[in-house]
Length: 296
Image (tube, rainbow, N blue to C red; front, side, top):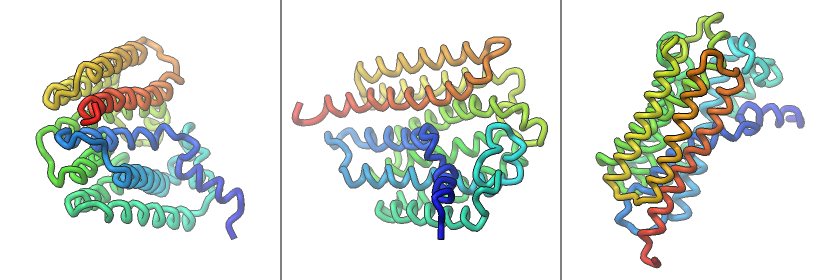
């Protein structure tokens, strides 16, 4: 019978003690769900909102478990990850696989509620999520694979609302991809010394001394794509105000990373700040939706 310690270890395996990583996957899905079809002049149905939230949480959970199963012998060699349940053997591989099956089943049930296109996209995301940990061993830019996986969080809700994908979808997808490349390269900077020792690849290693400039470029591209989306979809002044604040924060983050010897703690702080940035952009989108509701 499972003990209290086992349940605690399962919660740690799912990273429920670190909600930032769960929320940052949910944000692009909420962006997409909110603005997929502005012509409807209504907020997303509650049931669809619930399914998208459940699906993103379940997918995030499955992704965490897959990653930790792949890395259970490498994580003990990295300072940040050495205490993960599969790394410190407080949780068995058997239990980890059981949690993976359960979280994958929840994600499947959420996807099955959606239309065929959304379901197909959800299925297409599975191999991308599954191979990401392997890419850290063989591909110089594994963050690109993760970013592509993150992009499905845009495609699936959009297809659920409109039953199709259009040019605006791909603009938002591109913004999500560049944003993910930016914040996950920041995240990788905290592990770069350990990754170099054990041979793990990352964008923080690939870009080398130009990593701050790469991150700044990714954030600049994100701001540009979100601005382009705002113009195309007529998201309004409040949206652009929120985006301007977000862009200012991204600039501040770049300047902090570009200093000769940044504090080691700044990387995790910047990652968490990007959760708030994502919600700030979401607030701008939400204001546009309220403006267009018939009750106004």
